[in-house]
Length: 197
Image (cartoon, rainbow, N blue to C red; front, side, top):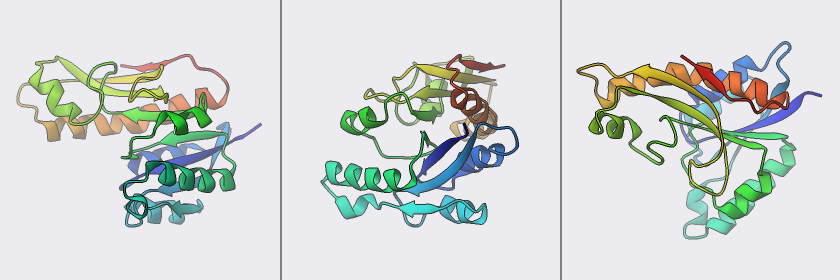
C-alpha cells in the first residue's frame, strides 16, 4: 500500500522538492501535504507548482504557546491523514508530547554525522573541531533533539580552506540524495540504515 507523506518546511524547501520528485513510479509513498510554520516560506510555492496541497500554521500566531502551536499542527496534519511525516528544514523544536503522537512515523534530516553536533551551526562546529569529514544524517524523530535512531548517513571530506558556507554547499546535494533513499526504504517497512560514501 502506498504511504501518504506530509513534509514540514520552514524555508526554501530544497529537501522537500528532492523528496517530492522522488515519489513517482514504483516509489512506495506519495506526498499528501507540505506544511510550513512560515507563510512566506519559498517551499510553499514550489510545492504548489508540484501539485501538492499546502498549509501554514504560523508559529508567530502562537507566541509563548507551544502547546497551542503543536495542537494547530496536529489539526492540519490529521486533515491530510499522512502515514509518515518528513521534517525537511523545519526550524521549530517539537516537544515530546507532539513527537510521541507520531512515534515511529516521523523522520528528520540533520546536517551533521549524528550523534555529533546536534542542534545548530553544525558546519562551523565540525570545522572548529578539526574533523576530517562531515555530512548529513536522516534519523527517526523522538522526544530527544536530533537523538532518534539513525536511518542513513552521507559523508563529505573536509578540505583545507573549507568554510561553513562551502561545507554547507557540499552537504546539501548529499541531503537531496540521501533523504529520498531513506524514505523509500522506510516507507517499505525497512529501517535498515542507508550509508552513502
